[in-house]
Length: 117
Length: 148
Length: 341
Image (cartoon, rainbow over all chains, first blue to last red; front, side, top):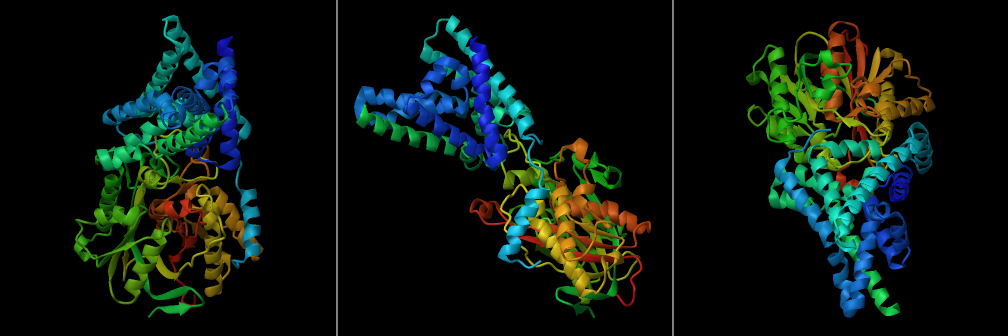
């Protein structure tokens, strides 16, 4: 069942993005920004975590999940170390994602040359 | 052909009529299927790692990293761009789309040097994502501190 | 001497001959419906060079050299080169002609550049300042996408109104005396901006400029559209062509029977996934140099109005929310010029 929920919720979030692209001519960069910010806000008010519990990867893999990670991290750090946690929590929680994206991108750039479409 | 405000407005209507709309239903179906499949791949990796006995937290980190790696590799091979053309938001919105947006400029701007090219351009899409994500998280943290 | 006619036109007295043309295109264009007309079709986007930008300059150099050769001349016979492209600061042309060692006017008219170079080349010959000039324009799909949009590897969808930048270079040798076809007049465009801001709908941004210049040309020379066997715009694509026809209809002029667009001719819409059609400096340059020049030489076309169209925005101006200014330059090309034109 977890695959079905992941598929439905993950696919559903992507459909929202697609409607935005087709209807508002937002570029992919703006969609990414919007979804991360949205995920962070929803995570902050505690709405996103139930979706993660329900759909698993269907909610964590799409970019709002990345935003939710930021929100979760920041709140955990605030719990642990007070107001300073607002500064440290976000990047701490998302460090693995950002770092692996940078590292793999760099390695890919070393190996591959740009391809024409 | 007078360039008046009224003519400009009329022309906007003409353009709207002459420009074909995107096939939104078809686009959405494709986005739904591909986005759903990518999430299922994520779910598969998660389940597998859990069986290996990893903690919840580590599982999340490894899952993201593996997906990011796959997307980087596919971008290098020129496959992710093709997938994106088919799937639209279906391959933009998942974390693999974020990885694609980091890898593709890194590869393309290599020719302009490691610092001014690759190094600077690697963030053309990811930079704003990280900036506004972190900014939002700081606000969330501050509010949370005062109301918790 | 040349005569200024009407508002924006010049009528030439000399018979300015298009002595020869040459064209080079990328793989995609080579696979299109006009494939067999091009002189050179590249095997890949880099053509043995280290980058797309370097490849574009190489194409410029090779195509200009070929045009001179086809005219039976050597580079030393050329008095001036007029050439332009889409890259920042016109580097596609500048590096391309670096080794050709001839006086050079670098032009920027976006995708209308070929019309601009033919116009200025003709004026130079008419003035007596030159007897043979080389005119050209180039663009490169990958280099243009990289400069104006996002990296090619980024997985995005192109809207249906967008056009595909043609990879290639088109060049022509203009000569004071020689065989037909002749350039007999020009109508130079002004900037026309009807407030289009969507950089993915360039056809719409340029259609107003195209319609305006066609209208002005007919007025200035006091003729009707039937005067021409064919009116050929540069790179409006399907969306822009439809708009141009409609705009002119509102002015009481019907060109729907003798009008086409290079951006429509160059690709196969169904099989090549180019959406609204082709664009870029090379679009009108290679389509004219290869296809329409050939048709004129064979007398299948006797008299055309060639109208390369351009959108004069930059990525910065688009990001700042500016609308896209359009421009178009009309060139009258005839096999049998009428004395009274």
